[in-house]
Length: 154
Length: 154
DNA sequence: GGATAAAATTATATATACCTAATAACCATT
DNA sequence: AATGGTTATTAGGTATATATAATTTTATCC
Image (cartoon, rainbow over all chains, first blue to last red; front, side, top):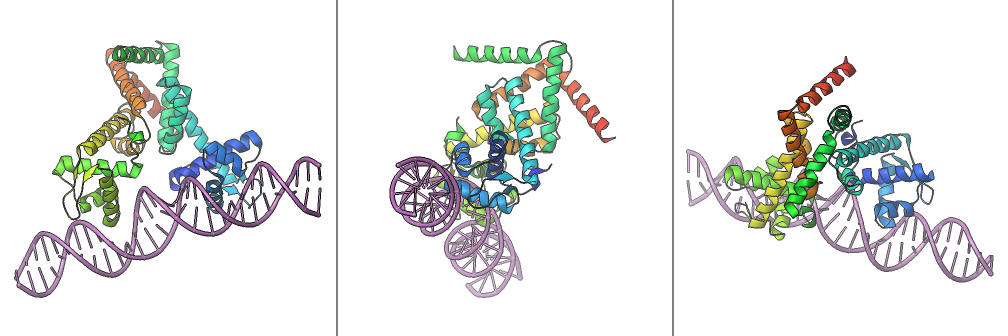
C-alpha cells in the first residue's frame, strides 16, 4: 500500500493508529481515550475526527462511538506493520531500549515507503538468521557499541 | 547537538539545509535559488527566511544575500551529518539506489536523535569492517534480497 | 536614462494542528 | 425528573506552511 500517496497527513496517520490500537483493545474508541493516548486535548481530537471522517477512514457521528472503516483499518494495519518492523530493527539490531525504539519508530514509520520497509524487514531477518547459524553478529555489534560508549565516558 | 530541543520545525530544518548547501556551493543563497532547490514558490521562501532569521539561524535583510549565522551553520552541519549517515546506511547496507537513499534520508534525518544517529553510524562501520575482514555480509544480504525479489516477481 | 524583465516582498487566502473557554449533551444518582 | 459530573463539541485564537496575485525593488539593455 502506498500510504504516501493517500494524502493523509502524519498527524492524521497517528490518530488513525491510536484509534486502531484502541479498537483492538477496547472494540471501539472515544474522544477522551484518543485524547489521552495522543497527549492532546479533546477539542483537538474532535477536529481530527472530522478530517479522518471526511477522508472516509473512520465511522464518525457526533457523540457516537468511533470505529475504523475498512479502508481506515487497512491503512492503520499497514502503519502498525511498519512500526513493528522499524522498532524491531532499532531494538533487536541497533540495541536501543524498547522505549526509545518505540518512540523513534513512531516517527520513522511515516517517512519510509513500502519498499524501504520491506528492505528493513528482510535485513532484520537476514541478520537474525546469520547470527543464529554462524557467529553472533548482533551480539558482537552490541558489545562493541557498549565498549565504545564506556571508552568514551570513562 | 540536540536539534529536537532547539524548536526548529522540520520545514525550517529543510530550509536551513538547503541554504547550507547553497552557501557551500555558491558562497551565499538567494530567494530564487532556495525556492528552486526546495520546490516551493519564492513567497513561501520569504516567510521561511523571516522565521529562520527570527531564530538567529540566518543573516537576512530584505533584498540582500543570505548567509548562515554561526549557530545556523552548526545546526545545518549536524543535519548534513545525519543525512549522510542515514543515506549511507540505506544505500551501502540496505542496498537502496543512491537517489532513493537520499530521498528517504531527507525525511529520516529529522526524526532521529543524536544517540540513534550514533548507533546507525557505528552499525554501518561495524558491518563494513566485518564484511571486509570475514565473509562479505553486506554483499550476501544484497544478493539474498535480489534473489527474493526475483522469486516474487517472476 | 527610461522601458522592460527578473527577483523579492507584501497582501491575502487555504489547510493543518494545536490551544482555552464556553456550551451542549449525556448519564447517574437521588 | 432535577442536579451535577463527565464527555464532547463549538467558537475563537495562535502558529506553521503553503499558494496566488499584486506590488515594489533591482538589474539589464538598448
